[in-house]
Image (cartoon, rainbow, N blue to C red):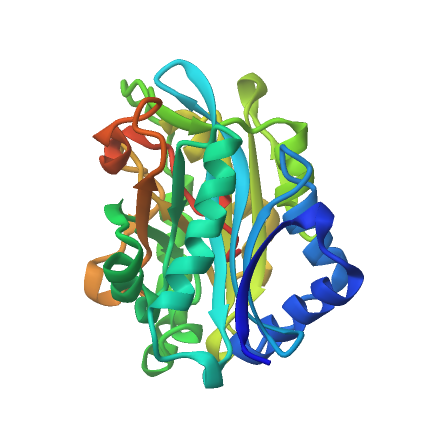
Amino acid sequence: MGTEIIFKKTNHLSTLEKSQIRGLFKCVFKKEMVDSTFERQFLKSCLGYSYHGLLRHAGEIVGSFSAIPYRYRYFGKELTFALSVGTMIAQEHRGGKDNLKKMAESVYGAMIDDGIPLIYGFPNELYYNHEKRVLGTKDIGRLDYYVLPLNIGNVIQKLKLFNFFSRFGSKIIIGRLRKPQKVKCKFNIDKVSDETFERHRYDDSYHVIELDNGAKCTYKTYDEVHDARILYLIDVLPLNPDSFEEAIKRIYKAEAKSTDVIMYVGKLPFNPRNLVKAPRFMEPQKIRMTGKILIPELVDDSVFEIGNWNVNISNFDVR
């Protein structure tokens, strides 16, 4: 029996097909995806399903191209865009570009039928050039890293003796008096962050702090290389200099004793006063954002200008 390309929405996948997709994920990415995570990621979207172009060989799913729908405000009107996630093909079935292209096109067709004009993603370093060449995606931009190192030697081992200085320095930075910045943050492209989004994107492992003036922030801590504790500020709503600065101060007060680095990954239209923008050569990995227009009558090339976007880790699924 040869290979075939099939398309299914998540709510039409059988229990066996879901299990095979999770098994392929573990085989390709060397990470476990439990059933509850699969259900939350793909079924609790704003449409109640996601899109899956599948490569099947002898009854077994050996490739997958998936996209999750999200609601966005695009220049004042609400549209649904889709995030490309977890593209994967088993090692023994790689080599040609046709399978990837056919899987993607099956998803594109279903999204066009649903009125979704844009698919965007954050391809890793290995997939980035291949995606652009095979699928015709274009660059939107590259995200930045903003950091506050509390114990720098726990992240860069050769600087272990400098932990005292980094912790002392971070305390000074956090303790500075707040100085309002007269920067108006207006984003032409911004996700709709409502209860549906939060139920889909976050689980109980995330923490939320209520800030002044009805704002809030979401964060989560991970154990990274050398057991360094990295606290990711995932999102601040609404995003502006004052709320961002308050979020960092409140997080520092709550978590400083158990954290080595506080980090925000995104694109800010202002310079945060209590985080430092990391130079490119110190970034742990390049996070590039790409996109492909599916319905040009609904969106134009403005989607390829990252300055139009309010974008950070909350817009994708790595943290």
